[in-house]
Every structure is written in structure tokens, then in C-alpha cells.
Image (cartoon, rainbow, N blue to C red; front, side):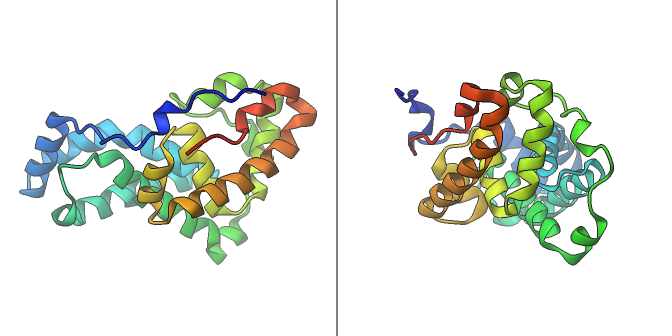
Length: 208
């Protein structure tokens, strides 16, 4: 099968929104209203990243709030010439992974009927491809892969970050990103093919 073009993954310089950069400078100077605007811009995205890793709405809310709190405390070390999105996603993804790995998370288990819970608004391109009956299959498959692989898959397929952006967001090498993504895709593809047929190629390997 011919591969799709992956020009979006090229290592081109990230474009920084000057308005966002100014808001972050103000927030770093103690302007809480400026930081609230930054939160408003990213709260849906950060929540979505957290939810797709922890698979619980209540925990995703807590993770998202904690991510913004930590980001606010660490603003002094953030380079406002860089985009804020990958940085806050890194914080949220790492918090989510830590929660999934925690003994408390294993004891909590999953709420009954979690697979039928609709995804939040702006769920991403994958949601438009998967049929409803396959959504539960994907949810169950995501539950079975390690949290670090799930985080890479979410950032790549749902958030559509480049390999380099994922590596920067999670603080790992591009080689590790590719390795984790390959393992996650293989496991998900095996689970989805019986239900989706060729649509399961949505999780096919691509170029960095």
C-alpha cells in the first residue's frame, strides 16, 4: 500500500503565536488574568490528552488542573519563544502516566460502562474514522497497552504532534518515540482489524 505524505512531521521551526507569547510574559510577571487566558486556550487540549491516557473523566480533570498549576509554578524556566502547547502536554502526559502506574490507580479500576462514554468535543481525526461499535474495541485495546506507549500513540494520532515534538514533550529520544509508537500500533492494529478491516490502517506505521 502506498504511504500517505507525512510532510506535517518535518522538523520545521515551530511557529509561536505572538499574542500567546505576550500572555506568557505577563503571566510570568505575576498577571493571573493573562495566565487564565492561556488556560482557557489550552484546557480542552490538555484535558483530552489526560483523558485518553487515564481513561477516567474525574482523574483527567484532576490531571489537567495539576498540569496547569505546575506549569504556572515553572513559568520562570519556560522559554516564551517556544510554543506552549508541547510543554503543557508534556506535563499533562507525564502526570497521567504517573497516575496510571500508581498503586492507587490499579486499585481504583475503571468505572462501569466507561467505554461507552462519549469523547469530549474536539476529540481529533481518529474519532471521525472509527464507528461506534469499534470505539469500545479501541478503548479496550488502549487499556491493555502500557501507559508510556499509550501516551505516545495519543500525542501522535490524536494530537498529531511530530515525532520530534513528542520526544520534546515527553523528554525522550526520537528513537524511543518510534519504538513505543510501533509497539502500540501493532497491538491496536491486531485488536481492530477484525472489527474495522481496512479502516484499521489508520494506526499504520508512518515516517518521522
